[in-house]
Image (cartoon, rainbow, N blue to C red; front, side, top):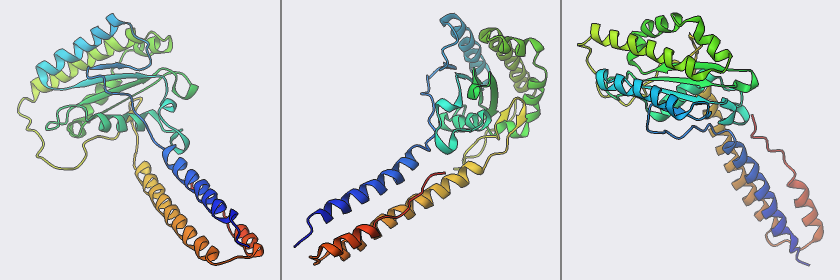
Length: 267
């Protein structure tokens, strides 16, 4: 007697395997806020309209006069944009990824700057980070000096969740530093065209973060995913070959037992 349940069991087994492989890949995705098209993106919703207009105007004037783009983004936490193995991503790493995702700044001079404020990073209170394009690799001391010269009131306002009171003076100080730099260095040439990505190592609270592990991990995830796909194909071929032409119920039980395999594509 032909075992009509076997095709259904095969389909169910393959569906379960594919679900776990696919879900582990999808859930590892890092997402980003939508680019607002202006210089301030208040994803944490902590600024009123007047405050956002004030910050946007400072950056708008700076770009008009110098060409340098400064973007400020507020978020609640990077955990809102990550999952699974990326759940513990630092704000510095996320800032660097967001800079690349949005392609901030002039693509020839690569002098864009991104500042990210997390109002409650991983449930541990505020945190902040900044990064810049390749231009600032040579002149990183300019941004470090700006960072080190921030007044104590900047941190006091952050501690007290007075976001606008912290951000406006900070941006005004950066505006002055960037203007002074370009006034003293008016003849800097743009970068030659090249396909390489342009970003500096992100800086968290004024110190450089070392990146690179994410790229290696993504490569491993890709290898695991491809291996899982080949495994599924092999499983299909094996089960079909075992089921072809068989008619005994004992054979059906034997194949069913062979389907119990471990699949672990998680991190």
